[in-house]
Amino acid sequence: MHGQSYADRTSPYQDSVADYWNAERNPVNLRLGEVDGFYHHHYGIGEPDWSVLEGPEATREERIVQELHRLESAQAQLLADRLGPITADSRLLDAGCGRGGGSMVANARFGCQVDGVSISRTQVDFANEQAQLRGVSDKVRFHLRNMLDTGFESGAFDASWNNESTMYVELGLLFAEHARQLRRGGRYVTITGCYNDTYGLPSRAVSEINAHYICDIHPRSTYFKEMAANRLVPVSVIDLTAATIPYWELRAKSHLVTGIEKSFLNAYKDGSFQYLLIAADRV
Image: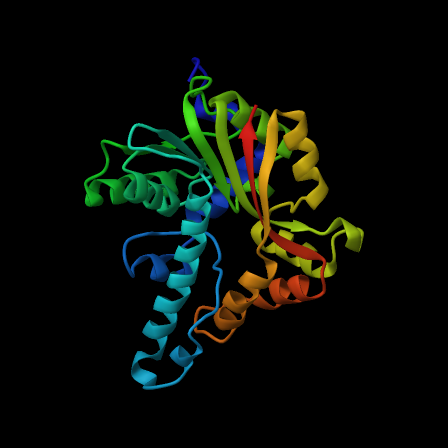
């Protein structure tokens, strides 16, 4: 990594974020991943099977876990749908990879090489262990690196993505690094929560989400401004707000509540917060 240590590549804020995720053991992330070994750190989309709330009490929690995981898996597959014409010879970058679920999904689907990066040592070690267990560690590798300055060679990747991790960094720095790493014509995809410029400044509910996750949710406009400034031209924008509300409504009725569900539901429903997929080509 150009002779620099990892510590030289992070800010004090990023160190505090790494500390948060190194210590994080949230059941809503771990229990869902145990269903099939795909450990995601993002939310879900689609209409739930509400019948999971009914039936035998003894198996209610397990039914809810499986249904929430189905919805988050649908979100991961939607992102993979937008990565472009990927083949087994392609190389992908999962920026802010969490415990590696998205990288595993992409490899299982395309058979390609995937590099994931996180500033959390705990997440990187966990994800590499999962790659070993799946027998894909020759193609899927996770690295303790800063997604703003990865040290990977320029133009090395056919596609890259952020799944709910852009709110931890400055978008100008992030998109500059993605543009550097992508080959010409490569595809970048993000799924993210952003605050709605037409609402004004961030709402109380958005501010509560920021405080809960130690993040800084960006306005929608900043995504497009910084993409344009960094040679990333949007090819597809999908508003997933309506598609994610049912996930939050189910989670709010589950044993996996974390206390932030009401803020998400309020923010989505009052129009101050949006859940978007943006796919862009590197030109």
